[in-house]
Amino acid sequence: MKNILLPTDFSKNSWNAIEYAINFYKDTPCNFYLLNVGRESNLVVNDSPYIPNKDVLENLILKPSKQKLKQFLKQIREEFPKNKKHNFYTLVDYNFFIDSIRKHVKEKEIDLIIMGTKGASGFKEYMIGSNTGEVITKVSCTTLVVPENAKYTALKEIAFPTDFILSYNTQILKSISAILQKENASLRILHINKKKIQLTIDQENNKDVLEDLFSNFEGSFHNLTNTKVEDAVQCFVESRNINMIAMVAKSLNYFQQILFHSKVEKISYHTNVPFLVLHE
Image 1: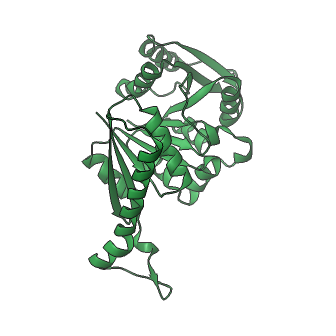
Image 2: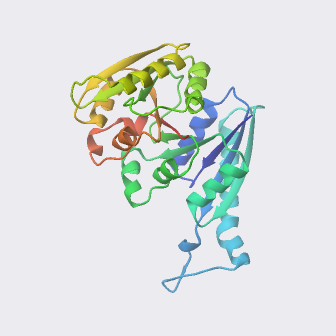
């Protein structure tokens, strides 16, 4: 049984992520935990922050969240056929979002977080506190980020950008193997150089490890030369039928350039291709 956390703020983007999650795991036994986190800091009286007591907290924050989550569950039951493999649970919490996520990941033994985002601008807003950006950088749990225009279709190709500099925990990469097997998809391992240079011995060794690890799956290695990693990824996604981009969070060089940059007007993959962010 897979345990999946679905943080929601009741927005269109978070509903889109829930839709993606249900469709993606339609044949997999899952416990889905819908979580809404309120904030005491949102309560203001006479232009000053108001610290509520337990009863006020229940009435002003928790009760409305519970009601909205019930509406979400009702909507799920109305829009999706009943699936005996799926169980749904609602969770409400308050105040610090990341602390709440971490707590439920531990308590519910969460395997995967699935979150929505408003595409490139949503990632850009991380610099001023986007919840999605916070989760994928500060919570040690594999996270699937579903952009606003992403709709689930059977996965054909998964791109895995890497610089081959760091070695990866093979246990973590099994998350990719599981998806490749489930979807009968192909893996495209993408290496991007700013200029044409030979791989070092360590890079070649790390490449060999990846080749061995994914040898049972259809796949290929690709090398691109581009001064900007995000531009190279964009070209690669456009030239192929890429349905998902997978990355390991500790590869900060690639990770930050692909997800967090300011040139959002030229990058469309943020709005329609899901990102699987793996944590060790």
